[in-house]
Image (cartoon, rainbow, N blue to C red):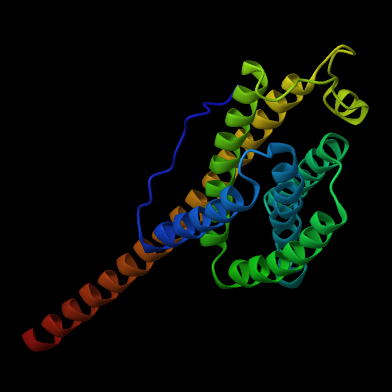
Length: 232
């Protein structure tokens, strides 16, 4: 199981923006849903399934346009989107969203698709960092949900059939088992997206280093030529 308490400390302004954006959305979720964890999961998993699909599509188009390999990123992101969709399919059976919640889902999804696509086009690094922080909050939320189930504050119930089939759970599995495997999924998505942001960081830093090295080399060659000319 992934380390559930992992947190990526912001290193620069981009990271701070990503974390602040995430905390703002967490505040909205806490205010609206409080401890209605099943309903919270339905709305949030609808949004959580967006980044992987949007990023995968944009990278797919970029790969076609530039005729270059994506290094496996597209499949990873689309797999993430599919996994988040299955989280939603599971919690629809648990929470049974009302008409109002379904309307909220439609509006939130449309807004987030547009917002995330813009962010990804402007800064892939920031976009992946945002998802990394989203998933950190998801792990916290599911840990709280599990605690409520284990303490009896929220009644446990049999796991939905869709969850048993998808995660190959025992037939006698309960909602607690489902929350545990979903929490592990979120921890995995957290690590992947933070790692993607780090990879982009390393590429940028490597490019800057090479450019600076090349610039210094050119200056050194120019200086040598000037010295040779003056000696003549």
